[in-house]
Image (cartoon, rainbow, N blue to C red; front, side):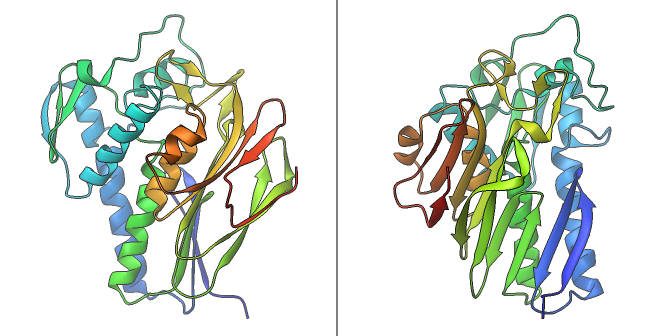
Length: 286
């Protein structure tokens, strides 16, 4: 018998939570509340979010207690990619048309994505914006929210669960998952299958958010979409790390990231070539 599933939309994406027993209304309410708190802090699409306040007025802003792992990972990935992966690409995304109204209309002029040290400083609990900065945590934020939702489930006694936020998947508890790696050029096909047990797998590909020859995975050094890699997958202990690393694989060589992080990976080049980590728990068909 299939496990009970709870399906819903959150932060602009479909979600599914699979558990051994149906979730009670109190657990569902707790999950919804946790997602709302996260969105109210980090969404650049909301007028009432902390991120929007920072974009309007420079200054020092105290973040919730969940912020340190997110900003710490961003700093590590920023350094590991030589500044290509940055939380400061928000304004560049807006100017390309991925704005609050989803206009998908690129602006005639573009501003340079600032360096981390030029725009923000982070002291472990508060962020100081030295200039109006449009933060975008999309490179790792959805994965992190998957982790936070799984924590809510565990706090309510749900020890075995799978949380899937449109390709950012975290498994906790007994058993394992077999996850197909969707072909970025033909979503009816898979390029491989991997096994995940008490860990996360996150995928990233430009085809999911593309418009007018553009997409949402920007190289902060140029302010433009990257084009060398067309799909990545990362398996790590947490969805936060897996999500961030899946994005970093568009910019950095895997060996450089493996020197800093413990994870498995697969990525596909624009030429069609597929490469993967040496000890992948699965198989690749191409």
